[in-house]
Length: 147
Image (cartoon, rainbow, N blue to C red; front, top):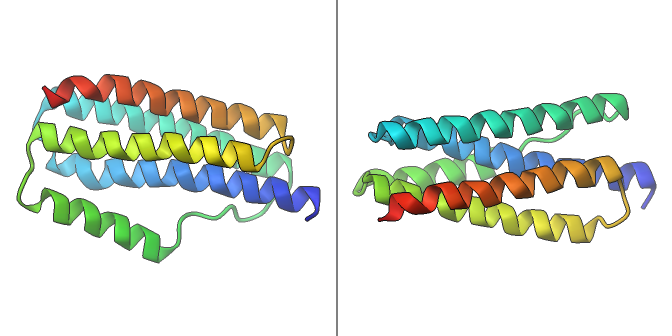
């Protein structure tokens, strides 16, 4: 595979990880009743959106057109999962648990993507490292809501 193709593949993997997080927050935020948790999730969303912008700027600088968001099936699956899971339980604890699982999965995806794209792009390594750190902090910040 050509280097530009590898860079595009790596960029798309990072971008889709970020878009999944943003969509999760957007889908669940209307169900959150706890103001403190709402603020935490809004803060997390802002951080994800900043990383999304970094990906878009990288794509523009590298002349990569059309970075790919998740397909409609993945979006529908995520939306359905959140709505089914919160249909009977909208407690702060349950919502925090769902968001913790999402952050943990995002963290694992970062590790796998970084390993799968070793030595492809230092700039993308930096973005994914920042994403991984964001996921780690989100986990720390959400754990207290389980109590």
